[in-house]
Length: 197
Image (cartoon, rainbow, N blue to C red):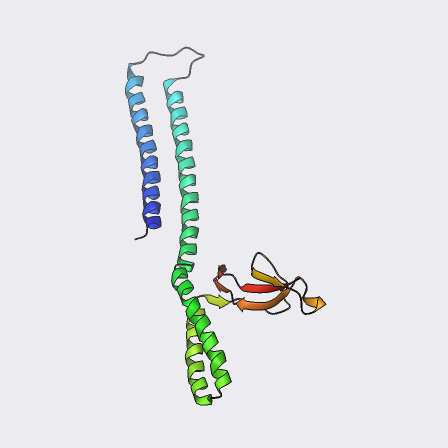
């Protein structure tokens, strides 16, 4: 079990204990007031009767309980969302470790295309496609970045800036050095690009 799951269990237990303690205190107070009410004399007109005071106390405890319950429900909802996010990105570490392997595979494919050996190329392409599809099924997706795209510092990592080969590439992406990848909606590696100035 992870530390996060242990922490969630501890927090759930703590809230549950607080709710139970508040209910026990309310019950004890009502029982104690019942015993005292048998012994107390009649009250003056301006003072609250023992029964009214007890009703007021019970109402206060109910309010406390409802607030605690609402707090607990919000907590459960928040932790459920966090848990879903955690499951979606649980394999992020493995995927990040696989990215250099994918890069090497892509470079090998480019070199094989230059060699001209069609049978070898077809066999390696099958393995390459199978690896890509398997990773894609697990949520890994390559980011589409092309030459001439607008540079966005939120999703691109500029490693250098060179004089633009043409005026239309000024401030835009001139070359993609390393592709970027997403796992679900989260970017796990930003694409490394060269921009034109």
